[in-house]
Image (cartoon, rainbow, N blue to C red; front, top):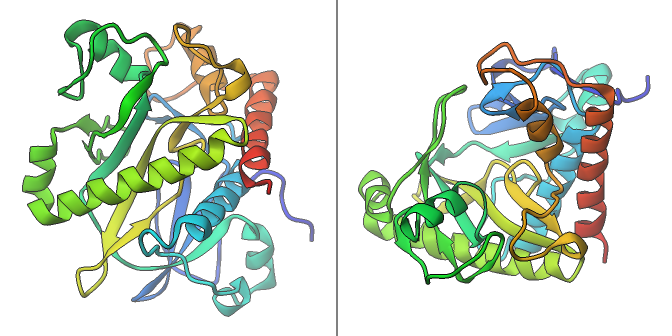
Length: 297
């Protein structure tokens, strides 16, 4: 059996399914260990689209594995070096998720997303135009769209339920949710991860404008990096050769999808419309190109 080029939804028989997110399916291996399967589903405007992006889940998994290995000295991560044969007895199950599954430690997720912004873009640009701040953090006057910030900033957010919007929150609220010392640690670790990743990416022709991290705690209260790591789904990647301050750069993420959906008379509520083949193909190519550039020596 050859691996499927596209996997919209996994259907493993060897393990109990715990749940499905926008992109990932979660299975329980044992009380301390999970299997995370990155499917090829794609979401936009907090809606899961009916079409998949071929190979997207493998790109997300390969990039996460790359970054966990490269930056693991900064903070422990949840990834375990277990072969799929150790957890999936059925060869058909292994074939279905090969290259898109991670065996991870089961940890207690923190109730915040750790967002780091290095450039002025997206909702941050809109807020800055109105108030001179990003997530309430004052910035120098006169900055332009896509401009690099004087220093990266940490802008936490709450985790929204499936189909809902995340909410940017001030650092003080994050500290109230998880405790001051832990919030300080999350901020310090997030900024360090971003700086080292951004330097690596820039040398390979990619600007990491912003990204989000997720963290969890083990039974002893030690911080671990969880979920995905610096992928086009969790980050805003711009090609350096197309980057120019003052204009919105092209991107290595699902911007083709967002732009297409924005051109439709759709109210951004489920059910989402289908994507034309050309949008699917261009988006898949962008994901593959991001992986190629970032993981090359």
